Amino acid sequence: MAVDVVTFGCRLNTYESEVMKREAKAAGLEELKGGAVIFNTCAVTSEAVRQAKQSIRKARRENPDARIIVTGCAAQTDPTAFADMAEVDLVLGNEEKLKSHNYRALPDFGVNDFEKARVNDIFSVRETAGHLVDAIEGRARAFVQVQNGCDHRCTFCIIPYGRGNSRSVPMGAVVEQIKRLAGNGYAEVVLSGVDMTSYGADLPGAPRLGKLVKTILRQVPDVRRLRLSSIDSIEADDDLLEAVATESRLMPHLHLSLQSGDDMILKRMKRRHLRDQSIQFCADVRKLRPDIVFGADIIAGFPTETDEMFENSIRIVEECGLTHLHVFPFSPREGTPAARMPQVRRDIVKQRAARLRATGDAAYKRHLESLKGSRQQVLVEREGLGRTEGFTLVALDQGVSGEIIEVDIVGHDGERLTAAPAAARAA
Image 1 (cartoon, rainbow, N blue to C red):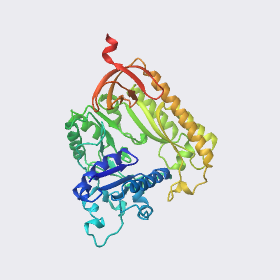
Image 2 (image 1 turned 45 degrees about the vertical axis):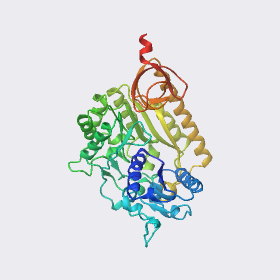
Image 3 (image 1 turned 90 degrees about the vertical axis):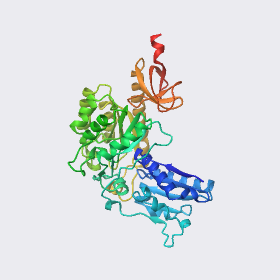
Image 4 (image 1 turned 180 degrees about the horizontal axis):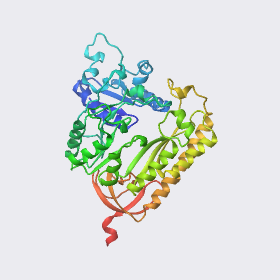
């Protein structure tokens, strides 16, 4: 029998799912009749929670003999909602999911004091271990956890209650993990965390993210591409900016946690930056690294957002030069301050989200057009598809998964670049 892990949400969940699968197998879940299906959930939006529940019900219909375990941020923040589902056998918290003995809490293992939900106070967790994994199943690039949790309390966000306070993986453990993955053939590694630019504040000497990046590149020469997941630009340190400017193996792609382009909304979100600071950051980094590509998260229809405030979010797409836009229609999360604020009508929220996505799509197509005629180094993700150093999709007819190839960009279809072998241009 198999242990299957279904992953929702962020890159950190993807990394943790590999740890979970190993720990669940070590606990003997493969020996169970029907095996086990583990859901690693996300709590960012109410839609993410709904999709997880829908998938759980489907899994039970398709696997009547399997044991179904639910964990992740949605399970951490609302364990009762999943424990009350007849389809679910066990609910584990975000800390519990990473330890094999917790998977033996299933009644199949003869546990007399069986409790369906085993979710402890995440704020009591003080450290984040550097779990070693050999591979990330089905992925051409590897994700490595460097940080977990968040000390900030943005008014819309439930994640600190799912992940706890900020805590960092020691640099030595991060370097050892990346050496292991590079040795197993991964050409690209992505550093991930909940609030990654807060890295190191809880470690001896308080090293910053920039020092970690420089240390990795110095001590792991075999890693050809190092990429950062989402960062908070207001926390970017000088070493990080210097690495962006001087380290060719650090990929020219930054995904920013902007959330809004309006100062009043940013204040009501309890963000720590203003729109002009975001615009200046992008301008400054572009001077350091002219080929930099920026992505961003932006929420449409945050409570009290007026038409004029929303227009500021529309304008910041061009003012920051954003190309990869993640748009979230505001979704009130119970237990957050924003859920108690005056709400924008749902039809207006949807309209604004659609317009913001259209603005992002137009910016992305301009970006695709700007790359025509260029030569790019592309990591092949799977047959027929890869990504440039700037994380732009490329349609390919060559290469194998995990390989970095050089191609000439000959056009695009509005969604991805089209490429020809680099040698074709010379011929």
